[in-house]
Length: 88
Image 1 (cartoon, helix red, strand yellow):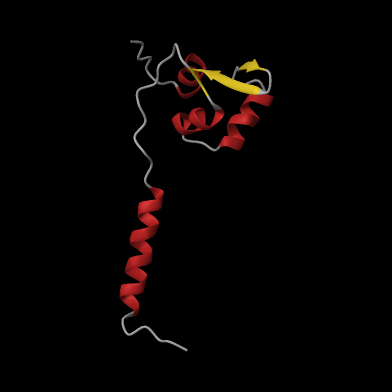
Image 2 (tube, rainbow, N blue to C red):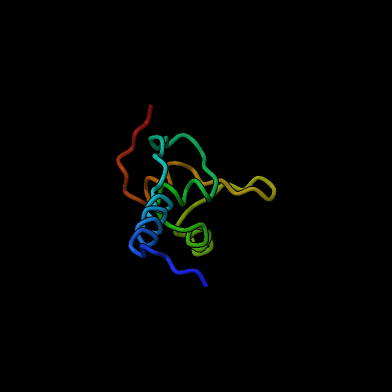
């Protein structure tokens, strides 16, 4: 059995790694004329992919279907999150 000589270093390294994982990448400004995947919509709404699909099922979020693909208009993301429209 190996014992760490400095347990605070192990805890500090864990806390640093955990904080790095929690940082979110910067998103480009939302374009209301574009369409987004459910994963991208979840990033803009700061929610999970599952909750985006739940919103779609319950009619709280409109979508565009192309075969099996699901697209969410940027205008719907802006409406849902009450973001200020940033049309180019």
